[in-house]
Structure formats: structure tokens, C-alpha cells
Image (cartoon, rainbow, N blue to C red; front, side, top):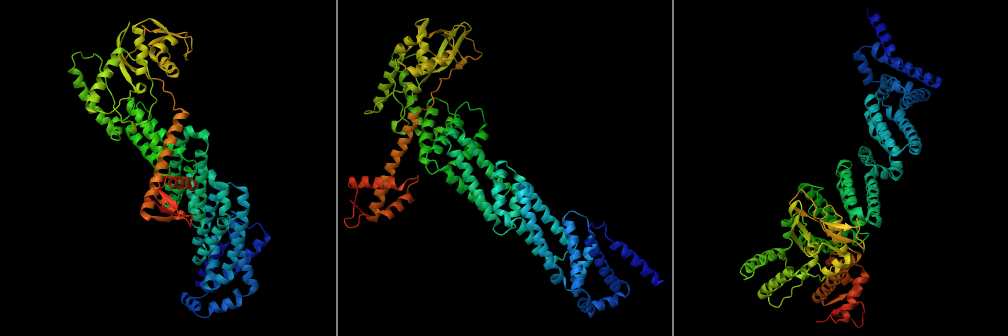
Length: 629
């Protein structure tokens, strides 16, 4: 009965140990047959022809040593056995199906006999090294980076699965290190050169996350990735900032680029602090490659978002946009340039009533609040006059030093307006003797009552538009030359004014001949047939874009202010130190000044102060300066 059971077991084992697929090559087949025979002999000897107790005793006694000495340690047997195992593993790596239970039994046998490392693992790792070295070289040439990264991830997963299935756990670390070294470590620079820019340009977040994950496994991988990431940001950002043709969209492109890089750092690079700091450093580097222009354009972008009538965003979205702009703003070294342009645009928004949030912007200008108090007192003053005017006058009183300068323009105001100006002048100078008022008609605006066939309307217009429209109380039709003579408005400004009244959406004047532009021979008459669904209509003045002269003037004003700041800093340092070498003085200046400055510019300011007797050179050591009290 026992004999029958053993025969049944042997039959069952024999069937279980047969390969699931036929081996293609004769050599592989022969090796596999030898492996199976050895395996069957060992199993029959140790498992079926002796009792479990004896088997255990044999394992603990002389049997492993005897078997290892006389069978497995035989060079020919060992070589053919290990070669057979390696061939099976190579077949599996090439995509064929092999008998994993057979491999598990054989490798378990080698481990039990304590010859696993010396007989198998060393050869296995050498073969693995050879295979993946060749594969890495070949696939780097044949495949693009995303495909290659996915292949590496798949190979690592397969090798980890082999460890679970049949390899000894002790092989895991050297095996995975080998794969990572040959498929990643040897090709890190090539992978990044070939594919990082493409992955970032196309925003391939899945592959970027995989790239970070794989490079984190290799020694020096993340450091190399960080360096390439920093250089990419500098290169891409420099193209945005240093290309004048892109100035129109520079700020929006910078915001979009920053959002994109933030997303990569957060979602692909595991919020790694090193990568986030490298990104900030790269932004600060490229945005200051072109001095002053980014600061100017950021100020103008802010102005476009804060203007009334900006329907692009809700208040919450506007606040979010401004927060993003402030992040970009912090990278800029010359913040005084931004401040100068921002103040100029802020003044225009407030004075022409085009601010999206007047209350918020008034907090930046206490002068407007003072102006409002003066206005209230003036209205009470007017009511006490013996001959009060039927025109309501509103005046913004501005201290010239706190506001951008505007070129005065002498225009011919109606008698009623001139009279009101004189009344206000008497009122104001009566309270503030010694001051001088200078009227700025460029920024004035008015509400006029007009009567059309359709009925009465109110039109909200600029002061220049007001002067033109009031002429049609005195006549039916005028030429452009007659209007220029009567109003005194400068020619370019007059053409824009007439264009807004006769060629825009709300055409309260008719132009002959018709057309979009105002020409020398054109004539104008009042459009009595004008219709509009609203009672009060706002007719926007066509704004002249900021001229090159204005931009240069603002920039020059900033540079002049910088010179004053440098002079003040030099005097302050020298007054404290009394005597200082040139290099130490320059070093102190760089620590104190909040804007970028060249050594040559500092030298010029120092020479200027020496000429003006604020300091002097040492007679024996020219590079030494002394403060002159």
C-alpha cells in the first residue's frame, strides 16, 4: 500500500515538474532536462524515500555536505545546472513563459545547500548587468524618453516580481541596484538632455512624476534632475523676458509659466523643498536679466486689471490674480521702477474716475481725502455767494510732488467755467496763502444735459469733449479748423476727441464725409436723431497710448532718484565710519541699496561727492576715503 502511494506521488511530481512550454533551442532543452533530473533525484531522495524525521536529520547532519561535495560542487554539474537556470530566466525576460515552480525548487535547493551565492547569484548578477547594459544602450537610441521611462519602470516591477516568485530575498538589493544603474544611472544626463524640455513643454505630468520617482532611486539622480530643471526655467524664462516682441504678453506668459512650474513642483516633484527653492532662484535670475522693463510691464498689467470696466474677472478672481502678480513682483530687484509706473497709472485711474475699487486705492492717497474735505467747504462757500452758479464744480486738489506731472494745456473755457475757477481760486488761496494753483484740463470731465428728437439725455464726457459739444449751442456746423480755433485744443488731442464723438458707438455728432478717421477737410454737425436706450450715456475719450517720451521720462526720474539714494547712502556710511577703503564702502553700499547698481555707477557717485567736498581721498592711499565734516 505504501509503495503504491510513493509511485503515485512520484508520478504527480514528475507531471508537476515538466515545463509548461517547450524550449525553442536544443541547448536550452538539454540543460533543462538535466536540471529536472537533478531536481527529481533530490526530491525523491529527500522527500519520498525517507520519513520526514529522517529527512530533517539528514538536513541537519551530513547530507547537505555530502550532496554539496559530491554532486553540486562537481564543476560540470554545477555549471550545467546554473546555466540552465540562467537560460530560463533570460527566456522569461525576453517575454516567454517558463516554469516558475521549477526555478523556485532549484534555487531553494541551492539555498538549502548554502551554495546559492557562490554558485548562482554572482553569475546571475553578471548576466543581469550585461543584459541591461546592452538593453539600455539600444533603447536610448530607439525610443523617446517617455517610452523609455515606462520601460524602466516595467523592468523594475518584473525584477521585483522575480524576487517574490523564486529568487532569494538576499538578491533583491544587488539585483535592483544593477537594473537601476544600467538603465538609469548610466543614462541620467542623456535622458534629461533628450527629454526633460519636451516633458516640461508639453506638461507631461505623469511622465515627469515617473522621472522624479525613478531618479530618486539612483545616487545623485535628484541633484542632476534639479540642475537641469533650474537651467530649463532660466532658459525658458529668459526667452520670455529678453524678447522685445513678446513685451505685450510678457506678464501673462510669466504668470502662466509660474503656474505651470508650481504645478510640476507640487504634483510631480513631491513638493521637494530643493526644487521649489531652485525654481525661485531661477525666476529671480532670468527676470532681472533685462533691467527695469519687467517692472514697468508688471505695473501696466496691474493697471489694466484695476481699471473700472474690466469684466475679465470677479472681485475674488481679481484678488487671486493680484496675489500671483505680487509673487512675480518679489523676484524683481528694481522695485522702484515698478513703484514709479504704478503711481503714475494709479493717479490716472483715480483722477479720471476709472478705478475698479476707489476706496481701496484712496487708502494709498491721503491727498484725495483732503481734497474731498476742501470740496465740501467750497460747496458751502458757493451757496453763500450773492450770484450762485447753476454749474456744479468738483475739484481734486493735488500736491504736485506726490503726483505725476502733466503738461499744462491752455484751452479756451466758457465764461461760466472761468468764473467758477476764479471763485474757487479766491476760496482756496484765502485758506492757504502763498500757494499756487495750476489747472489741469487734460484730466477734467463733465456731465452735460442735451436735447434730441427722442427726448432729453445726459452725456458724461471729458472736458475736451465738453468744449466741442458746447460749440453746437452757437451754430449748426463747424469745420475741424474752426473747432480748433474756438477751443484751443492741441491738434492730436482734438482729432481723438472728434473721433470719439462722431465715429464711436455713441455718435452725438455727424461727420462729413463719413469715415473712421478724422481728416483735415471734415465738417461736423449736431446729430439731432441720436437714439440710446439709457438716459445717461458715457462717451469714452479715445486715450492716447503712453508715448515713448513718457516712458523715458518716468525711467529717468527713477534713475535720478537712485542717484540721490546712492549719495545719501555714501554720506551716511562715511559719516558713521569716518575712514573707509573703496572696496569696503562699495560692499556696504550693496548691503544697503535696494535696487541693482553697477560698480561703475557707484564710482561715479563717489567721485561726485568728492568733487562736492563731502569726502576726500587719502593723500598716500588713493583707495582710502575720509569723511569731511
